Amino acid sequence: MATAIAHAATAAPLAALLPARRRKPWTVGPAQYCIRASAPMSRITDGRRTLIVVEQAGLLEVFVDAPDEFAVTPVAVVDATGPDPVAALAARLLRTVLPQLDTTAGHRTYWEKGHKAAHAGQAADLLELGYALIDHGAHPQTTHRIDGPALTWTTTAGAHCDVMAYGAHGTYTLTYEGPLCGLYGLLPLLLPPYDGPALPDVTSGFTYHLTKRFPQLRTAQDCELDFGTQGEPYGFITTPSEDTPTDRVNDTTPVVAQIGHLGTDLLLTAAPHLI
Image 1 (tube, rainbow, N blue to C red):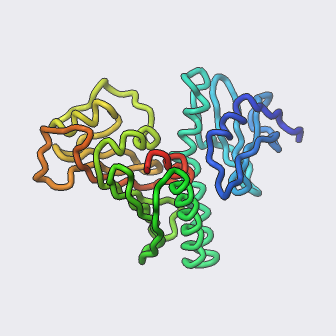
Image 2 (cartoon, one colour; image 1 turned 60 degrees about the vertical axis):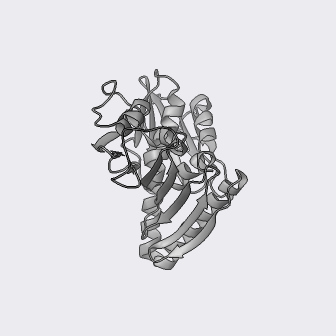
């Protein structure tokens, strides 16, 4: 079968937006087989994961290129005519596709080599995140708990952050305790684009303050909002106590947030916003 045409105008900038895991950047090359007839396509890989990028009928599509498996269904699709479609595609990969690939690899390691090998891989991921945080001025510490390895640190604003691995999954859970403004740089990386009403229902000053800035958040109660669904980052933001006033809210208001299904790639991208 003829080699498909590499289309670096999309693939190269996309590869540049994905972090280099184990210091191996994503590289661009020609796709090894044709998925869409006559459509420009490229193959990008970091040596561990391989994706095929296709431009077809005003869409950008991404397929997973797995050994001995012909890609049929795209794992991510964005409108190529929208604002900054390459950035939108990278955000989709970071939130959903790459974490799922890591989860699949983590489960395979667990069943083939056992939980010690799976935990060793998680520890290596968190060590990589730790070095990224150090590069930005943080002072993280590694620990090992019953469920797996963990990384903890305190931000310059005094917030406490904790990233934990649970079981053999290839994703992690972040716990944040600190001022509300410490989440402002992180949430845009976690939340999908919002296309609903101008502002969802709010029940307090706390929920209004947050949903005005991030309408993707859903009001759970006066002191709590949640976000996300299965297969993407999900979690909640709440006050430290139900007795905390929810009518007087500003950027320094203390909050507790817990966010699950975070892939290593997304955490590395978010590192500058976690220090």
